[in-house]
Length: 189
Image (tube, rainbow, N blue to C red; front, side):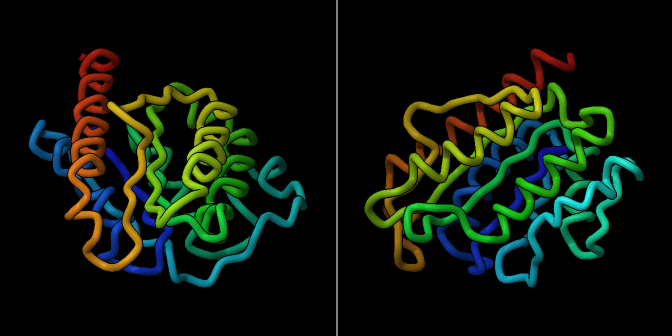
């Protein structure tokens, strides 16, 4: 079984990526296959609302990396979406993943139903709850199971490397990873 994490930050080794890596490390130690997919910083187009995915299930009319993410989501048992806070909102890459993969899944027999989904957010000061809400709306409307942690799935970290200094943030991501593993074991063993 696989745990997929999608990093919406353009920083490949920034705070959001390291938050996701913390949760993935817990999964890897428990024997699960893990993957960190770098979405942030890639050119992306939003959903065209063309309906092509309903006519050709599982296939988006826009030929780019979002189709690859959707294919990876379908084969994963658990999915994490991570975004830094940009003006109290998601990065455009994660928003495109939400909109396009959401429609792809609905037109493809609700292919994400009952998978595990969790969002994480790096934030300087404020806006993280809105980011997490947006990610969780995607999971919930796709009939997914959303685990929590010991606090909001966020870290107060702006500058590079600040996540490692946020003890509560690291503990929260570790616990999130543990809860994902626990759910995977309850659901699939």
